[in-house]
Length: 344
Image (cartoon, rainbow, N blue to C red; front, side, top):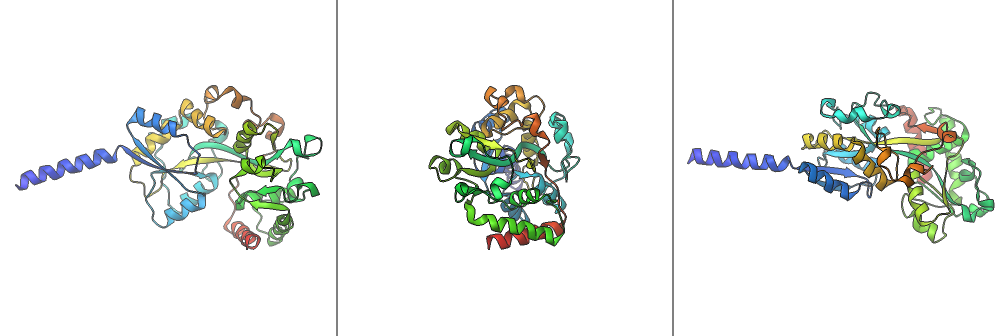
């Protein structure tokens, strides 16, 4: 009987192991990955993916710090790759399991904070600027400066929405003031706060969603937003355009990382490597309407996306793009204080 029981238990363990090998728990922002691509991945690999949404990098970081093991792969920005890596909350990657990393475009191969890509592999390339409705501004054009956003003319007041994202607002205000977004000088932080507090009465809201609805209902004329959203809105409202403010535009990369509490690491590696194949990442780019960091993907983008200046910044705007900088703890503490005072 003991022998039989042992065989049965061993068989059950093998079955459980086999089942575990066919599962991947994927965490991401809502609406930021095409379901059809998950079906394609399952068809090609047999791995069943459970997709769970969270509303911010901070939310998933908090869950990981609390010891949560709900994910095998998550998407986080450059800034959080660095932070989570230093806190040992994500794995240092075994790049022998990621041969498609050779497909990463040179300009995205060595990001600040993870210069050898030891912790994160690229998903989408994102630009943050200003979106506005040309049909509702004089002569159909606004000056390409952050001043329009922070010191709006009378007709824009109450018709502007700002992103409810600390780093985005702080960086934009810093560039508008001509100062370093990573400054440790308290006086620089006070100047940023002054700009944001002065702007606040001119805003309709701080929000990250509901943008197209507000444009359609004519509640807003301008929105602080991500480039892909502008591309999506343009399909609904052709008068929507994306502005690259001359003082600087934030460009960063969202990345795949493996939480240290992951249970299905082999599947995580397989998924990340699969997503660095040009055709697969292009499907995500077509869905999200973002640029990506993989060589060879452009041929698989829709013709419309290939020509869209919102997705592919024209040469004259390239110099305005500012990659994410990793600020010191002292600088981040100043940012936090400014944000608390602004939102208090």
